[in-house]
Image (cartoon, helix red, strand yellow):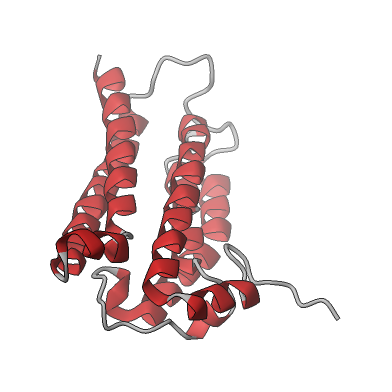
Length: 197
């Protein structure tokens, strides 16, 4: 019973994270309806989204103790050291990408601001480094918990993060107009654009 309730909590918190994060990346569209308060409102949505993301991470830990009764082993046969090594291989570049994106985005990473200009730094190469780094951290948690179940469950985050990036792009075009469209043309969406010579 606890296993199923926790799994339901995982799915619900993932969906609520998705819902509120998508709402948080739409300040320009919302501004046309409610005015300048849209940016503050979107900051609140972002905070709520982060809370649900942390709850989802907590359900991963609970899942380790109360896995679903699936016809799969609950732990990898190779043991913790290998799983920790895999987690580090995934986690180090993912965390670097996420943190670098947060630093280069500044306060906009958590609180949308009308005055904020287009980013520099890593954003000169790719448009969504935070999302790319963050999405793979779900597999880091899964491997640190040595759980094949959670490794499979973590695939739910791929469409969630992809849709969040698409939603953000739509609003950024509204917000910045032609300069953002030109920026899209010279940078990669989720990966640096390869230059063809």
